[in-house]
Image (cartoon, rainbow, N blue to C red; front, side, top):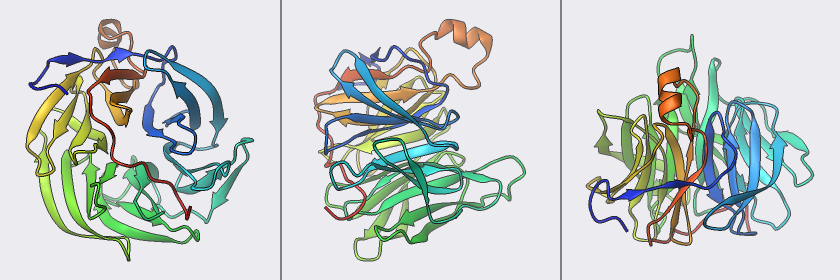
Length: 296
């Protein structure tokens, strides 16, 4: 684990570069790594060996795809937040909608993840011409019904839960804010918000929670991932040779980081040619338990 800021540098582990790589997740059923390329509308599966990622398969979801989670049953496929709602992707690549559009007009689904109780939570971000703060965080129940968990969101991003399943962490990137909420396991509701981190030097993006209950947060335009205590106290920083890390997960003590090259000017692309690749670094800390959608 890095003990002081800027002591550890992540290295690239993917041959491929993704325009807007996002949402890395460990599939606890198979041990595979899952991630998405938002703008391409693609879901990817791979095998992570420590020094490189072997791509196993890619799936065309048919819309901008912000997040993925595995279903609980082996071989049952994956649920994704895509377009303005949710979709199921089967192992043979068949894609079917799960209900209709739930997000407001001129918004699209973005980041999300599963809670410890079999629900998939994912939020939306506002697009050009949208009503201000018209994004939201939604909850997809195992029976396919959808409810709103948070409203008034600008850009729903990193989502995670403490190891006890009693606190939900959520990033609104438009506000540059990480907030903790008391989480009701029975209702899947979030309340009693506590602002943990307000950022002014970079934009917080995707996050994950480790086995010690601390949070790793990708810092868009910050060239780093930061680790925070549950109360928001900064603990450590992992540097990257690219400006736009997007999301993170932990795999057997290794931090895996997706990145993006979207929107970079030519000078920055020359200075950071590995932008869009997936990175990794040994931090010596395991992940909190991985969760799936639906009953086991």
